[in-house]
Image 1 (tube, rainbow, N blue to C red):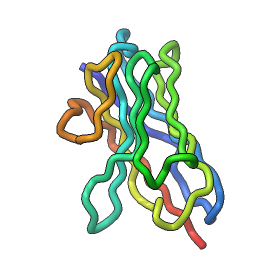
Image 2 (image 1 turned 60 degrees about the vertical axis):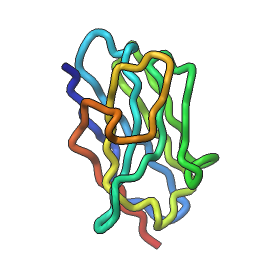
Image 3 (image 1 turned 120 degrees about the vertical axis):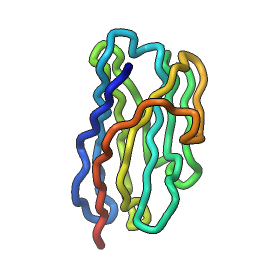
Image 4 (image 1 turned 90 degrees about the vertical axis):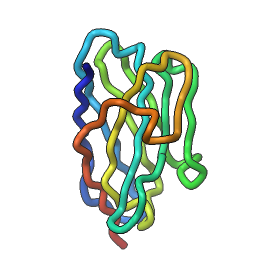
Length: 125
């Protein structure tokens, strides 16, 4: 069982930056791949970025490539999402999710077994 807790969301102006954190329980965190998803009101949940348990592989949704960076510190059981050059379309509730995957990444929410409660990111003009 893995429990996830997100933090780092907030209100930021267009062009600003935020760093989200996803803290996990458990002692085998390096065996779990983690992804960030986001959902804005009225929209479907959208894949943002993913990282394998070993950090060897990462994947990004096209609209965030070059602006967002996913990373992890397995010693701290934490995955980060550094978000730069934020724009209005990035406003959403961001959630992290985990699955057993040391070397692969996944884009579908259905592939993930554990979810956090989410953290709100609001970008204003």
